Each structure stands twice: as C-alpha cells, then as structure tokens.
Image 1 (cartoon, rainbow, N blue to C red):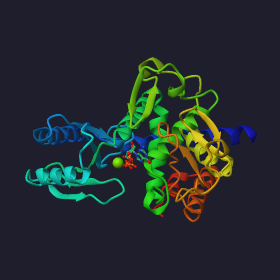
Image 2: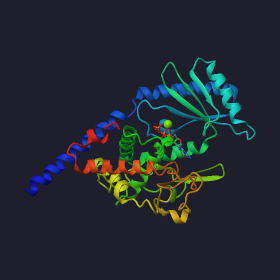
Image 3: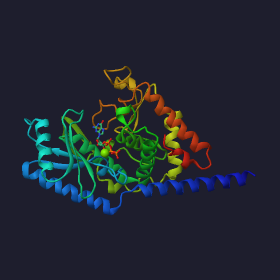
Image 4: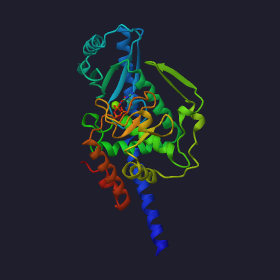
Length: 335
Ligand code: GTP
Ligand code: MG
C-alpha cells in the first residue's frame, strides 16, 4: 500500500510538472512577436533621434528582462543627459512627433507618478509607454535578464507566479498589491535560498559591471555565461518549486520582522533597515528590498487591507497545491 501510494504521488507530481511546463511554453512570446517589437522599437528610435540626436532610447521592463509573456505592452525609456530639461515639455514634444507619424492613441500623461507618453502602433497592435530618464529601471532590467540566463527554472517559476498573480487580481500596485517586478524579485530570492542554491547572489561576487545612476552605484557580476549550470546540484522540479514558493509566502515568511534581499541573497531584519514603523505612506507590511535603490521597499504599496488579500491568496495557492489532485484548474481560476 505504501509503495502504491508513493508511486501515485510520483505520477501526480510528474503530471503537474508537465502541466506547469505546458503553461510556461504557452506564455512565451513567439519569435515573430519579438521581431515585430524590435521593428517597432527601431521606428521609435529613428523618430526620436531626429529631434534629439544625442539621446538614447532603451527598452526596459518585461519586454527586455525576459519575464515578458506574449502580448505584453512594451516599456521604453528616453535618456537625455541634459540636466536642464523639463520632463513635461519633452513628453509633450515627443507626443507631438509621434502623433504626426500616424501612431495611434498618443497621450502625454505629464501628471502621473511616473510621467509617460502612451501610444499604440496600428501596424503591429503593440502598445507602448515611454518615460524619460528612468535609467535605474533600465539597469534593474539588465540584472533580471542576467539572472534569467543562469537557470531556466527562474523564468519558469516567474512565468507561473506572474500568471497566477494576474489571474487572481494581485498584480496591481494601484490596488495595493505587488508589481511584476516585485514578484520576479521574490522568485530570485526564493531560488537563492534553496539548498543547494539554484541561483547565486550576483551582487556579492566580483563585479564585472558597474554604473552609477542617480548617485547610486549599481555593480554586480554580469558574466553569467560562466555561471550556467550553477544550480545543477539541485534537482528540484518546477512543480516542487512552485509549491515551495507559495508555501514560503503562506506559512514560512516572517512578516513581522523579515525583509527579503536579492542584493545580499539573504533575509535582513526590518529593524536594521528602519522599516519597523509606518513612514509617510510606506507601511512595510511585506518587505522586498530593491537590489539597487536599497532604501526602496517594493512592498510599500501594500496596505492593511491588501496585505490580507495577498496572504489569503498565498495560502489559497499553497493549500490547493497541497490537497487538490488536479490543482491547475483552481490555482489560476479568475477571481
Ligand atoms: P508586466 O508588464 O506585468 O509584464 O511586467 P514588467 O516587468 O514590465 O513590470 P512593470 O510594468 O511593473 O515594471 C516595468 C519595469 O519598471 C520593471 O521591470 C522595473 O525595471 C521597473 N520598476 C517597476 N517598479 C519599480 C520600482 O518600484 N522601482 C524601480 N526602481 N523600478 C521599478
Ligand atoms: Mg511592463
């Protein structure tokens, strides 16, 4: 009977693994889609360089960090060195230029928290947000992309977690839940903490890449091709990791005291970061340290209502994975 039960378990976990891998594969953007994105980006570059020959245009966010699922919007950053510029004026000018090139739904949102121009390319159907001088986001995009090269399980785990978060309605910072960027950091941290570790801590090993942005030094080991196979001593499957991830955030994370830190590959205390009290609008109810802007808690958007929603969703996911013989249908059920 014991043996039979064990074999049944192994069958179930193998099947669950296959289901998660199939979901992952179905979310990956096609080559064709990537080509369209690149062509659209080149068109933008041409238009921008006509007006600002010295400026740089960069892709950031999920279209460039390798955690983007099919049909995502693209995030673009216009970097202008000139310290004198007025962001609103640049955005309005930019909107003007794009409008006269037949791009659709061009809108300059100059009063948003992060001011942007939004637009849509009628040829490819791609939507795009352009911001000005958000160079830190370009650098953290590179960090995430570099981590993704080390072990494919990071990309698989993050796709499943993002898909879950979008299905369950817990991926909206304006509603007090977490950004995609925060979820990817949670996945990286989780894989750094496995024993044996699946990911290293790139900021703790010899720096091969270093830039200073907005007075913040961003440095880490970026020769990740040398780290392929780093996690091969750990044979955990994606099904095991997804379960472990939700179980950690449902039952093992110390919400009262702990800060997760990809920068150090460890858990820090709220006390040492002075994140124990509410600070303005930052409540620190779930603490995720930004790898470069270390004073920045990506959990700051979470309030006393949404923390409850989040934790209940983590528990729901962990319980489904623990008890449900066919968990995928329920796990991703629209809320
Ligand atoms: P999806 O659009 O949901 O697929 O994911 P995304 O990776 O594009 O995430 P999102 O649109 O939330 O953020 C876009 C990028 O902005 C992220 O990849 C980060 O580079 C950056 N970003 C987002 N939030 C923050 C933040 O609070 N601080 C910093 N420094 N960068 C951020
Ligand atoms: Mg995005």
